[in-house]
Length: 264
Image (cartoon, rainbow, N blue to C red):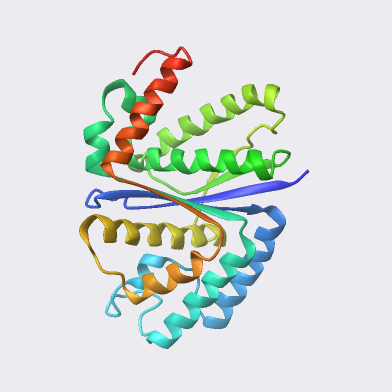
């Protein structure tokens, strides 16, 4: 039986950000083992301990382990890491939602259903795509979710409730579909889990795209280079504008009504 693991990360969850991002990469356990070996070899060769995209892309005056790197080294390392991601992953998912739009349109009991936290909604959007991918490509595989460690302020307790509910729903659906029941989930330290560092890059890139679309922020060369490489691999991107979010909300309410659930 194949084993598939999904690694999730977020961007824009800090209060000052106008958009919340969820991003994930999925691959088999064997491919992730090869990925980790490749990733750690790059870390050793280029002499840094772990990769965090926000630190990497920060001003050269910032004090972190990438301080003092010239652009040639930055470009070389970024290309190596992104190429390694593309080789080892099966597919990726990114979802983005503008916080103000979500607050305007997703209210009351419907908000409790969708997610009180913006990131929860973005995560569920990715998870829906994952479910479709799994039913098509890996219906007999077990699937385990790994999240970066989170604080309660970022909605960790809500993510736990969502995942527990998803497992219960998976058990019911499995009786009719034959798709293996959804596996477990864990919260891990990004510094110790290279696949989470890969999802960190994807989440950061998703945030750059959202800022370009919402406020016209130009892409840095780092964003351009990362996107140029990562977008050549299988990747589903869902960035909601207000109209799109409104259409989704109306359709979801109608679906709940059709299934006989109380209207939010």
